[in-house]
Length: 51
Image 1 (tube, rainbow, N blue to C red):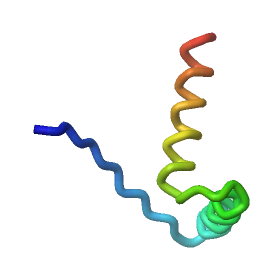
Image 2: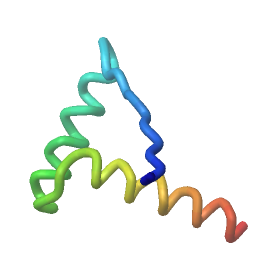
Image 3: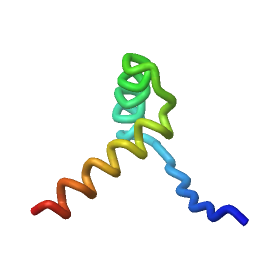
């Protein structure tokens, strides 16, 4: 059986602007938002583990 992990993110109030910027970045990169978020998280984890 395939292992799966899931995160649900909620963007509300002052965070809506951040979501919209993220969405536009995904469009510009021709990526889906979940794919872009995963890449950002992976980069941050690598950056922090290299420190």
